[in-house]
Amino acid sequence: MPVQQDIDELVGRARDGVPRAVARLISLVEDAHPRVREIAHALTPYTGNARIVGLTGPPGVGKSTSTSALLTALRAAGKRVGVLAIDPSSPFSGGALLGDRIRMTEHAVDPGVFIRSMATRGHLGGLAWATPQAVRVLDAAGFDVILIETVGVGQSEVDVVRLADTTVVLLAPGMGDGIQAAKAGVLEIADVFVVNKADREGAEATVHDLKQMISLVRRELRGPSWRQPIVRTVASRGQGVEDFVRALEEHHEWLVSRDELPRRRAARARDEIEAIAVRQLRSELVDLRDGDRLAELAERVAVRELDPFAAADELIGDLRS
Ligand code: GDP
Image (cartoon, rainbow, N blue to C red; front, side, top):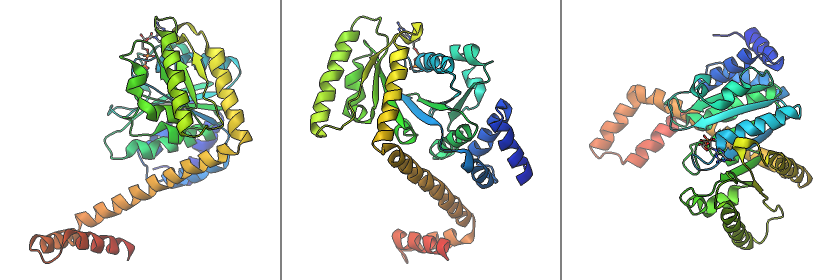
C-alpha cells in the first residue's frame, strides 16, 4: 500500500509526464484502492484545465479511427492528449486491450499521448465510479484534451455526455439507417455531429436526414442557442479533421461565453459525488449483510413479523447510527 509520500511522489511524476506514473494512478483509482481518497485529494489542486470531449456512436461508425485522426491533429497543434476508451461490455481493462488497434502503433511512442481502455472489471457501477476518477488523473497530469470514447450509444453504463464538456455523436451512411437507430435522444445529447465515411455512397442523404431531424428537435426545444454543426469526415484518410477540430473549438468558446462550462462541470461533480456516496453506502450495507443483523431482520420478515420495507428502514437506520 503506498504511503502519502509515495502518493505525492506518484502525482509529481505523473505531472512530469511519466506515463507509468499516470497508468499506476489510474489503476489505483480503478481498483478503488483504499488510499483513493488521498489520491483524489493530491490530484485536485492540479485539475480543471483539461477539455473533455466525449465521442459516441454506433459500433463500426469509425470512432476509434476518428479518435486516432483527432489525436494526430491535436498533437500537430501541440496539445497533449489523453484517451479513455470505455467498454462496458468487456471485463478487461488496461492498455493491452488496445494492442491490436491502429492508433496504438501510431501513437504508442508519443509521450504527449496517453491511451487507456477502461472496462467494468466486474464491480457494479464500477465504470460510473472509476471513469471520472481516471479523468481527474489525466487532467492533473496536464493533458490538454481528454477524449472519452465509448463503444455504443444508449447502452453504456457510463453516460459519456455527463462526463464531457463537449459530446460528439458520430454517424455514418449505410449503417442500417444509423439515424433512425440513434433515435431522438442522441440528437439532444450531441453538441457536434460527425458524419464519418463521407467517401461512402449515401453520405449526403445522411447529412440531409440529420438536418431535418435536428430542426424538428430544435423546434421542440424552442431553439437552443447552440446550433449543432454537422462535420463530414473521412477519418480513415484524415479528411475533414480540421473542420472537426474547429467545431470542437467553437463549441468550447460557446461554453465559455455562456457560462455553460461551469454548469456542466457542476453537473458532473454532482454525478461524481453521488457515485462515490452510493458506493460507500453499498459497501457499508455489505458489511452489515455479512453480520447477524440482516439475518435477524430476514427471519422476522420470513415469519411476517415485519414487512421488507420496514426491515430495510431498520437496516438503513443502523447505517446512520
Ligand atoms: P468504431 O467501432 O466506431 O470504433 O469503428 P472503427 O474506427 O473501428 O472503424 C470501423 C471500420 O470502418 C474500420 O474498418 C475502418 O477502417 C473503417 N473506416 C473508418 N473511417 C472510415 C471512413 O471515413 N471511410 C471508410 N470508407 N471507412 C472508414
